[in-house]
Length: 344
Image (cartoon, rainbow, N blue to C red; front, side, top):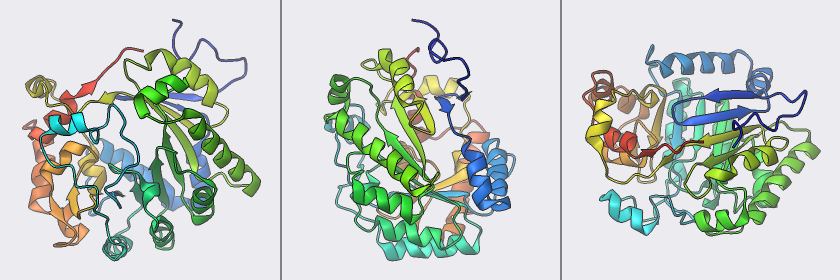
């Protein structure tokens, strides 16, 4: 196989390739300039703080982003997801009963607190399928009208129908991530148990609706989690989506199986998430990471404390110190150890 990502580029074709520890990203669109044109200095300040927090060079007095699991439900049972029954047994702790939703009133209190404390970003992406929640338009609208500059939604794309496309584009979502993970229909069926063509059609309808509305938002990302089953499809996936999506991500798989955590301890890793974001699960518990395993290390609940109190609490401080001091908590070791790096 030729070097992935470069063997089929045409003359004059330009996109930015970015490599991180678990991610290879192709940025077809200059999304930062698009955000800057709309939000100006506020967006630039957000990204400046984000990059500093990424190195733990600062700890803002409030999370830069809050991710919300507004409903603990998903319409998929992907073969590699912790919601899959086999993985639930391996996780050895309760993921949720999948009948819990975060009330809008509780969300509203967090956003009100965020407005007083310069919250920049909200994300509807944690653990479940955001488009299942019928009140999602209210959640998006309330963030938009309270000075949040980045409103992010992640979906498997199955429910990305005409109504939901209008909600996202016209309602003020700034980013949508669609998890696809395959180029061939048979691979998609194997991994995600559904029809790939439906997802492709839905994304194409989104792209077309943005065009007809003259909107660059939401920035559209398609993602591909690398597995043994799909690894040979990465180049085809890139070729197909590079003139349709704004961002294409290739990510390592996290199996979340309870595995060699002592090996992870030896790697002396660092994770910046506790300096950047807080995660609100559907039951109101707050973690400082979007990983499933982080639920084992909740640092508070929005039903007991404000987000500012939780973010600056002794529990949150201890969580961060476990990373800077390399005295890792089991949840972090478990997450890092379960990363399955499959060569391109």
